[in-house]
Image (cartoon, rainbow, N blue to C red; front, top):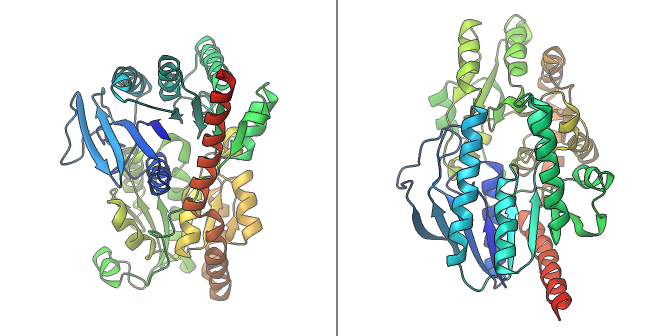
Length: 415
């Protein structure tokens, strides 16, 4: 089977969509299938093309057996609604124009969170007369409404109509959460064509390791209790809550040795750094994004990991992928997200939950974990026990089986 996968994020970018697509496609190639990915020059989240790449009309490379075609797009930083929309739309157009040059395709997969990529996948599927699979990573445009990035009710209604159109035309919808599936069923989409393949983790890359003492020394973290946030610094993540918790702990004797490490980039990072400087938070350390192969070094520095999203109804249906990295690295979780992901934390017993955007509760919960080393060790053990249940390789093969079924059904319907 030849799978054509459309995504505007792919390695060497290190965000969740890039990792999921790469790790799934790599397993499909190992299983004997051909995978072609159409994407753009790597630039997320700064809007700066990575070293070794150019934003050209067409460039081709092979990544772990995956044929990768990179097309020209309008590139901008992950900030500013209008510019990001132009970025998304330029990829949609470029992908549609590039796809006819990819021959003998059996199925088209388009992945969100923004669904202009899914629009392109649907258009290509019509042209090639093959099934269209919608990988649903986010309820877009609902997520735009949740963070206040768009205020026009008319435009939001139009986007929701387009969203439903794509769901109805998809031969298969692969949702990353059960909550998303329930939302679609509530809006009239048949549950028979929706399968849930949650996010997971590459156990061959993220595994427990001893603390990187050299890196800790370089960063001034020796002798510190380190609470880390590793990921995108965006509107949805509400990271000012971490800064406020840092301010509160700085004033308490018990929090004198606590340091918050925030690694990553995004639309809010500049403002967050300015706010931390204004508050004199010398217990907050900002680090830029590092290549994926180096990320486990930074995980090894953490005593606890913070997972956080803003308090919004939509985010109760989200499962942040970094939760599974916490498990595989054996790092206890401080989880500031309600809903389905909190249920996983409680069911697996891998950490503590605090109310989103409640800095006081975050600070108190962190101190409670810091003061109980036996509890931290029990969370670490449970993390490592739970991680294999979210093995990306297993999840990739499960998704492949559903894609094969969708392709087979489409062939039968034509005969």
